[in-house]
Amino acid sequence: MLARLDAAVRPIAHSQDLANEEAPNLASIFRDKPLERLGAGSALFWEGDPARHVFEVVEGVLRIFRVMGDGRRAITGFLYPGDLVGVSMRDRYLYNAEAVTTVRFRRHSSTAFQGAICHSPELRPLLFARLCDEMAAAQDQMVLLSRKNAEERICSFLLTLARRLSGDGSPATHIELAMTRLDMADYLGLTIETVSRTMTALAGRGVVRQAGRHGVSLMRLDIIQRLAGDAQSTEEPERPSNVTRRAVWPS
Amino acid sequence: MLARLDAAVRPIAHSQDLANEEAPNLASIFRDKPLERLGAGSALFWEGDPARHVFEVVEGVLRIFRVMGDGRRAITGFLYPGDLVGVSMRDRYLYNAEAVTTVRFRRHSSTAFQGAICHSPELRPLLFARLCDEMAAAQDQMVLLSRKNAEERICSFLLTLARRLSGDGSPATHIELAMTRLDMADYLGLTIETVSRTMTALAGRGVVRQAGRHGVSLMRLDIIQRLAGDAQSTEEPERPSNVTRRAVWPS
DNA sequence: CGGAGTTTTGACTGGAATCAACTGCGGTGG
DNA sequence: CCACCGCAGTTGATTCCAGTCAAAACTCCG
Image (cartoon, rainbow over all chains, first blue to last red; front, top):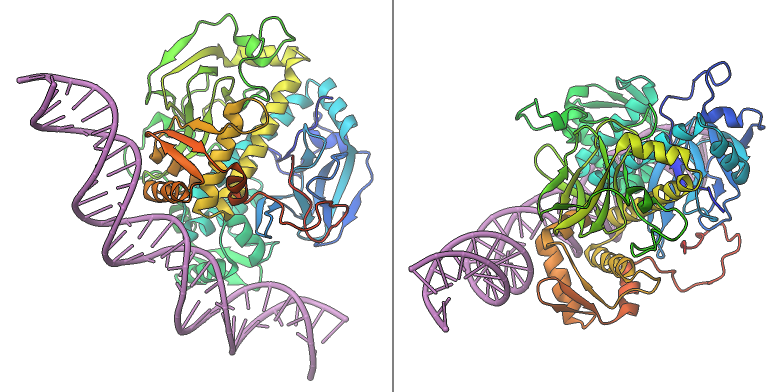
C-alpha cells in the first residue's frame, strides 16, 4: 500500500503544453482517458470519500476546501487546467473538491496512476516538483493568512491569478475571476463584505478597474505589487537570500 | 532539473524508530553522517541560500519561517526529531530555518540524497508519504489561520503538539513548549499579548495548567478538543453520501 | 419584465492589535 | 549570598480593522 498522495498538485508549465509530441509529462498519463464533465457547483469528491481516482483538470476551475464542524469554510486552493487533483498517499480524500465553473476533466485510477509514476523515471521527478511547488504555494498562503491585511490579501490574490493566467512570467493585465466573492473570501480568510469593500477601494484609487461582475483590469501593476506586501523593503537589494525572492509561484 | 524538494517533511512514526535493524527508512540515509550541533537561535540556512544540503533533525526543535519585506514574520512550521529539512526541487531554499533550542542534526548533500531516493523503491514512497502528510498539515494550518479565533488556534496548537510529542495516537497530557510566546504568535497568526491572554484565560477556567515558563498540563483534553474547533458538530455521526452538509473530518 | 442570487453600501460591533506598564524569573558578578 | 540587569511574559487601557447585521442595487437568468 504505497502511493496515493493527498495533495492537489499544480503544473510547472501551463496547460497548453504539447502533451503528445513532447517528452512524457504528467498529462500524458491521462491522454487516452475519456473527457468527463462536471457542472458548476457540483462536487468531484468529498472529504472522507475513498480516494479511488486521480483527476486532471482539462478546462474550468475547481475549488478545494474544508468545512469546520459549525459550517465555516476554508478554501485551500483553486485548481486550473493542467492541475492534478486527488493525488494522495491516503485511502481517503482529505478535502472537498467542487467545480467553480463547468469543468472538463479526465480520470485515472489511483492505483494505475501510482504504478505509472513508480515505473517512470521521467514522470516521478515531475510529480515531485509539483508537490514541492504546491508546498511552496501553501507556505505563501500561510504568510498571507497569518500576517497580511485585507488589502494585501486582495492584491496578492490578484497578482497570483494574473501570473497564473498569463502562462508566461509577466502578469496578465486583465483577468476574469471565475469565482464569486464568497469563494474569494473563503480563500483569503475574509468576508464577502470586506472583499467587496477592498475591491471598491482599489478601484476608487485607480489601481484596478472592475469590469462586470468578474472582470478585473490591473491598471497599476506596480502599485498592486507593492500593496501585495511581498516586496523587499528598500534596504540592501543585493541580499543573496533575496535572489530567489519568489521562485515560488508555480506556472 | 531533478529532485530537490522544497518542503519540510515530517515522519509518520516518531524518531525512536529502529533505524538500523529494520527495513530501510529515510533516517537510514543519514546514519553514517556525523552528528552536528546548532545553538539555540542560530540559523541552519536562510531563504535564498543555495540548497546544497538536506538535513535530518536528531534532537531539538527548529522553526521554519518567512519574513515579509517590512519585518513581519510568519512561522510556517516547527520541526522535531525525525523530520527532514531542505528537501526541495529548487536550487534555493524557500524559507529560513533556525534552531529554537539547541539542535543536533545530520547533513546530507542534496544531490546524493536525491540519488538515494531515486534509486530506492523502498525509500521513495516514504518520502512521498511525508510530503503528503506535510501538505495535509499545511491545509490544517490554512484552516486555522483563515477561520479560527484565538482560543481555537491555541487549543489546536496544544493538541497538535500533544499528539506529536506523545509518539502514539493519544495526546500527551503534559507538554513542554520549546518555543517562546513570540514563536507561538508568529506561528498562529496572533500577537504575544493575545497568546498570553488566551493561555491565562484557559488556565483560569481550569482547562490547562501552566507550569513554569514553558510547561503546560492539559487538564481537560475533552474541552480542549472541543475548543480546537475540528470536532464534528453533534449531528448524524454517520455520513453516507450526505452530500449537502459536509463529509467528515479525516482521521 | 420579474425574480433570485450576487454584490455593494451603510451603520454599528467586537475581537484582536497596539501601546504601555509592570512582574518575575534567570543569570551574572560584586 | 544577594543586588542588579535584561529579557520573557503578563496585565491593563485603548484603538482600529474587519466582522456582523441590515438593506439597497445590480446582474444575469429565464
